[in-house]
Length: 464
Image (cartoon, rainbow, N blue to C red; front, side):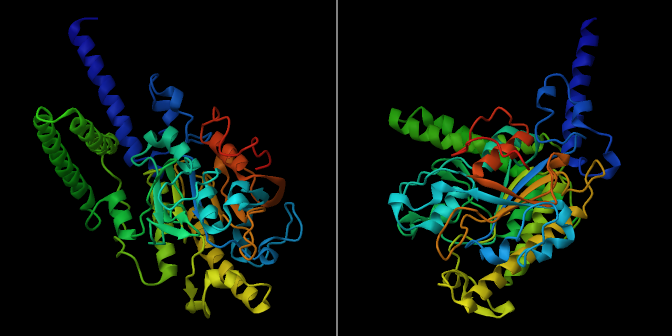
């Protein structure tokens, strides 16, 4: 083969790869392109990653973790008997229509959240342990938790999408200082941790989250606006890097170390921009931009749930967390006739009136989640299945019985079929095992079979 032929072949290979990456970012959510499968388009250099975060059909496989606060009233949450013919409990009635699409996971524990010698702080531990499965360091300033399971997944599969993961919250609370019995607020207001000392702060503003995903402006203008913003960011980064190089010659060794730490953060931003650009134009979802944080809490939750649906539908990310409210939240619910705070009521001391009110709050949260499940079920994926079929959605809390601050037999639902690898439509008791066993099983399905342990895991959860 002559030089010109080699050059043409190299250009074609480069063009083909760029075309695929562009298609993956913009077209994978469109039914018209269902024939495009990573396994048929990937070259040899990336074929080894084809099974990461995909189903047997080649459609994207998604994982989301939704956290609700203050546990649940056990008598209203748990059915009388396990099995596929279980009677849906009072709290979970809103999900009955889609009972064949979710499973109730009983007897999953988080022993690392128990009090032990640390005493009080069950709400901080309920939050901080939920996705990490490790014992938290009790301190207001010297925080130490563990990498959360969503970030373990994102570290392996995040390169497949424009955003490695998405962190959302409906609780714009404190993020510094002490919150619960001497524990740092960081434990209580974050679900996702990229390292033992670094929580990933979730976005509470629907507008900011939407514009981050799809760009600013009305439908039809967002793609150009996003390109313009990326170009502006690049210009700023180029200026900063050039200025830093000129400055470096005049700095002491200690100052050079400080500058290097700063530039590491700058380079991370640059890498994120490059990663976003390699997927080509962003798919505009064609809906209006949300108006910030609504005053109505229910509307806020639904906006965040809708953002998750859009993020999954457009394959903007395959990993997400949503903190509905931090554990210990004392939000009132006057719209359903409950003016008292949720946390205050959860310490009901067997008062029938308070138990009834907490159960009403649990039911309210379940209704919001049921709407999310229905939207996922009604949204078609690239393989003709629903988004729900090709997802694994955890809905649960870090406290079991908030009245007694227990962390055994946690209220946890697993919605979705994991692309056909899960068996929804049943209630299974798992025999008092670590919740992290479940996370290992979900990680396997995301293509992380080499993950031997996570947190306090003792093995895989078999019956899922």
